Length: 244
Image 1: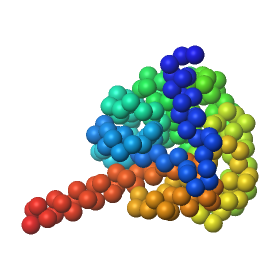
Image 2: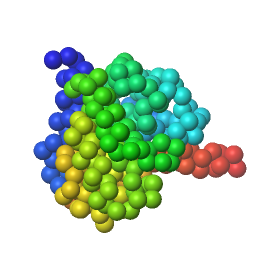
Image 3: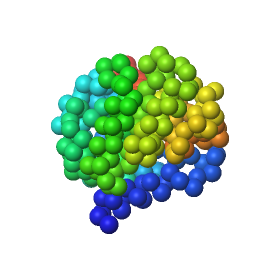
Image 4: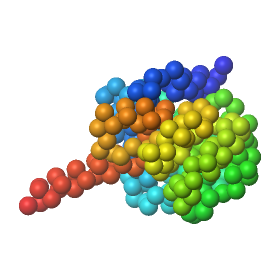
């Protein structure tokens, strides 16, 4: 087994065998310094957010050039000794083989891949075929987290998200991520989706609310760009007080 495959398997194992009130909580570092803070706090793995990394590089979310995103992920990976998954948005238009190779070069063990482009949902079967190509190119060296964008693209029916998730799991996804799903539909999604389910939590969520998300169906919890936004807000408050 290659070192990359072993690291990815370690990351996969963190998603399985969890109790309902003990979801895997993955903070989202936006640079090497924040990654070290989360590891020193005891988190066993991390998941970079595209929005947080974009902000740290001076871009709007979705506007980060691929080269800069991969370089930022590589710096984060080098700074810590725990598995790191990367949000690489829609794959930057790269062919599956090149996408897998460039991600593996960063040292990341997983990635998020979204199923919409410029605000429009992709055809789910075509996207599933593309995910299958990424899986074939990466083998077992990458943990694939397939984002399901129906809820943030105006499709409220949970069954549409479940249908897409089933296609993506069949294509080789390790986890599905129904971003923006209302809390009230999480039990329905959990019942209808195979494998781990990723839920995004507010940056200010209390530990008790994270456990509640687990009881409702979340296998893993991430924060999008929320933690970077929270840190920036704290810095802005300090800057205002310093200036005054």
